Image 1 (tube, helix red, strand yellow):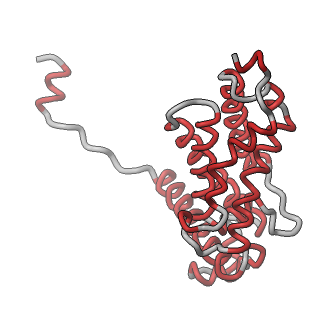
Image 2: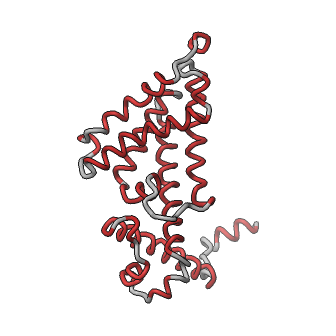
Length: 228
């Protein structure tokens, strides 16, 4: 009997015990995520800048000093939440752009729509990500890395629109990308400031999101050569 046949006849191998170190790492990771969830709930209740680590510890059922084993400071909690939010936002707009019926402006519009919907559904995180509501907090390079990936994604979508003759090549420059980011910020900021509890489809400013690609194209109309 071959060794492989012997293994098959003996039945499936059973997993051995999880090493103690792995169990501890898993529990630590789970506790960190629980702390972040509690922090997010408190930020929604008390305001993004009003986060108290003592309140987080009480809700978790531990003494405040024990919390510092997981996060050394309040800004460290903000940083972990910033990275979590940016990764979620990045994944949302990336998947939306990939589902667009066409590349270029159509994909930009699909990404904008998905991003705006994510922001409306995650308003507390969005305040931390896009409006810098916590005094003296700035994200670390690691936490900010997904935001740069989002910019790279949008750059690629703009380049595709340029190649399709939908935009002037200048649209793919730094000023063009800054304008593109500013366009989506406007309607979303207005919606959150005036009607934060209104559903996306009923919002006063949300219909403007669908018009943003055309506004961008009006700012960077294609040249005759690019349009051919």
